[in-house]
Length: 114
Image 1 (tube, rainbow, N blue to C red):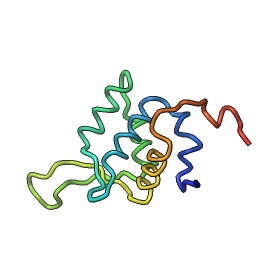
Image 2: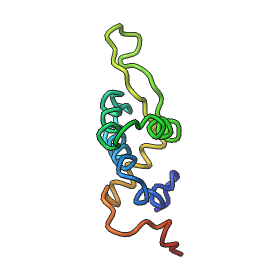
Image 3: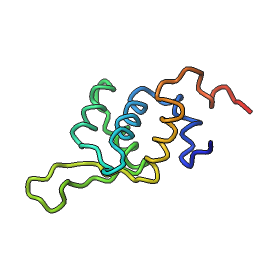
């Protein structure tokens, strides 16, 4: 299968924090809602990386279709969330459904497969 995100080519090469963030976001993506609680997302980064992880988490947010907002919208008691871009996260979920989230083989980028 071809994935528009090319996740099959790089997921197993990621550091633990990024893999965990992918799993967390994918678990919260669809079919009805596409968002992850900001506090939960931030907690994953703090637990997965020693020290400050702000640059890496900001890079993840910028590159993978996460948009900061609130839910429910226009509610004074709303909670901060990252909205997830369905076209990206449906593709990631399709990969996880087919391949799972653990990596049995080596990083494909490093082994230069044909």
